Length: 75
Image 1 (cartoon, rainbow, N blue to C red):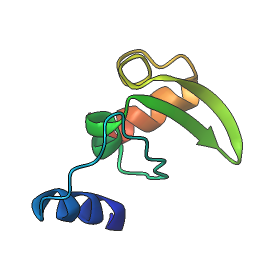
Image 2: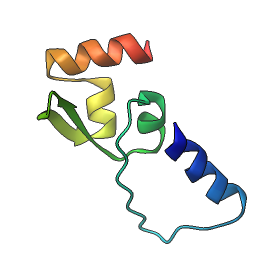
Image 3: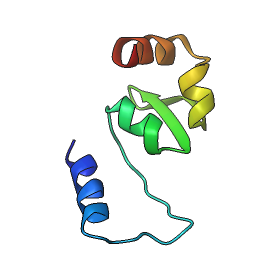
Image 4: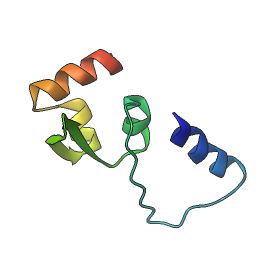
């Protein structure tokens, strides 16, 4: 949750990020990741289960574990 507040606080005080802007965020906040992420890597127990464009992962997850996690936290 802290990264979300830090990111929005920087935007609030007028710090503009250069384009293109790259930021690596590790989070369980799926709403935040869906809103700001362009590329998502879904991991479980240290293994990458799925990776790709955020829109693809959030709208059509291929791995059953990804789907179960997103269903629990987004819907």
